[in-house]
Image (cartoon, rainbow, N blue to C red; front, side):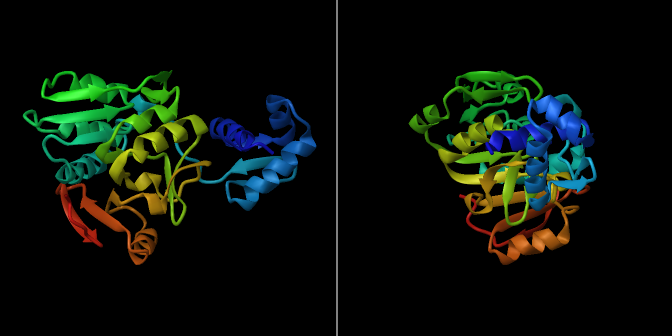
Length: 267
């Protein structure tokens, strides 16, 4: 089975959490037997639960809609953005992924800092257009309407660039799998952006932990630093620490770093 059908099933079930096998077969123009095999595989992967004649999506990631997400968990996102600032130095080239936490990082940048920014985020680009000290590169691609971002037409085009740090977002995060998105188009764009950076920093609030989404954008071993808040599940954080991964826990109320495990040189 092609992997994109997994994505199609998950996307349909994110809009309709419980769905019959017959309806899925009609929507995907295939047989009910094919859908049963697909759902069996997704159940093995712990994405769905099979019942007689229908399936239920388990712990679905929230739909990607920028203007819905920007108002959610704002205190946590602001604290994460402030902590991420210490990894930015004047005259660096940085990559900024699309996302609401990365947008708050953009809004937190000092007005007098000189930077080169490569970003697929349209909202970040518009914010940065007010700062003449920051040079902005927007790669060529297609508009992702709900995400307010660019989907790269050719991810290989990024190979001509180099960056010091990439600040990345995700739709879902699991240990030990890493960061996930719901579509291959978003995944390939994020991977291309991360691939040109010397250091990759994942910014995510507690609501993204332990959620199911299908397409792996960044395996855990490709992430250098994780910045999250103190509501992140402690058992998962403990697993990250034991794996030797650098992780920063912020306190949303004080906007300060509460714990910093396995620290490295911020430079």
